Amino acid sequence: SQQGEEDPQALSIQEGENATMNCSYKTSINNLQWYRQNSGRGLVHLILIRSNEREKHSGRLRVTLDTSKKSSSLLITASRAADTASYFCATVITGRRALTFGSGTRLQVQP
Amino acid sequence: AAGVIQSPRHLIKEKRETATLKCYPIPRHDTVYWYQQGPGQDPQFLISFYEKMQSDKGSIPDRFSAQQFSDYHSELNMSSLELGDSALYFCASSLIGGLGYEQYFGPGTRLTVT
Image 1: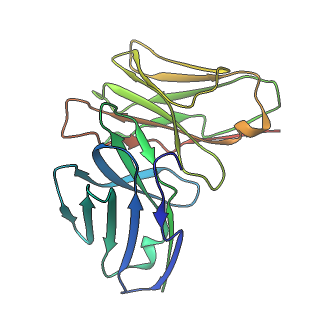
Image 2: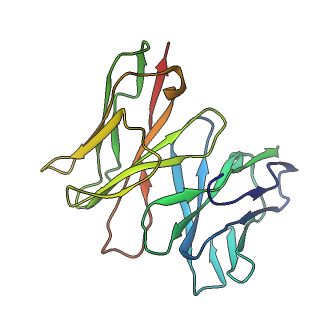
């Protein structure tokens, strides 16, 4: 990936469990965003966290950002089978507006 | 709410042919981005336009060109197609003056080069 890696590459959990995905990046950023993609389909924006924020919540999603470690995590609580998808972090590098994507985590939630 | 529209949704071309992909951004959005996603890969930024002017350039091959028209729709033109151009091509739009840099993606055009 141009910007960083996501960890794990694949994750399989049971419905009701929590899922945690991590993302690392390499350069100074303006913000970091998480997107979801169902197989072969469009990318859906989930949440954006700015470089001066440390944590953000949206429904069952919790995102943290550690700019000193250049890393972020996405926590999905009480997962559902419908959460099965690939999750990408994407950064907006300082001075630019285009997204630079990480390599994605494939999440499988077993019913 | 209106979303980003892309056409066609699927396109099959032969090597060395040309292809034109179209994108209609969300109304009032002023920036359009193009991304390419190869099989099993993460999306890669190609090019963007702000107020009809090219605003940023990524890993777009010289064989590709793009433009944004007065009605804000954008077209990605691809010539001398190669097998490696087979991918999902996404268009996204955003409002620079808005809450942030959230980009709203279209459903993508799946290009298959044979």
